[in-house]
Image (tube, rainbow, N blue to C red; front, side):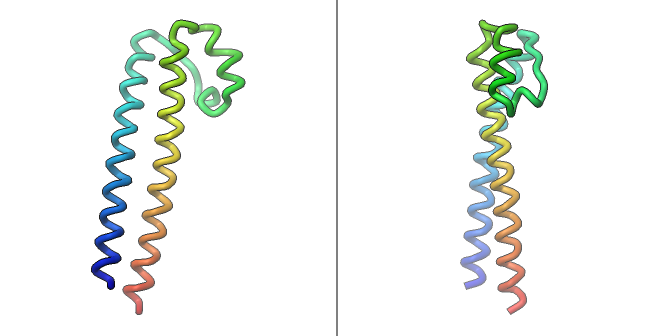
Length: 101
């Protein structure tokens, strides 16, 4: 039972890690395009759609699609990192429980 549980934990961890790395690569590609076109905005704009609409999109109308792609990938990467941390914690707790018994 413990071997199966450890195998599942390792498999899920590796899968989540590869998905996270995949989206981080996508974020870096989008970021590179934004840097090349000298698009600048702060972290507050990433999480506040209204602020982005009012302040950033009017300054860079031709880069709207790239900015939206970057923001979407960035938010997804943050969610994936949160899930990854939660899974690591949960599976670590499960393994500690079964190791103690």
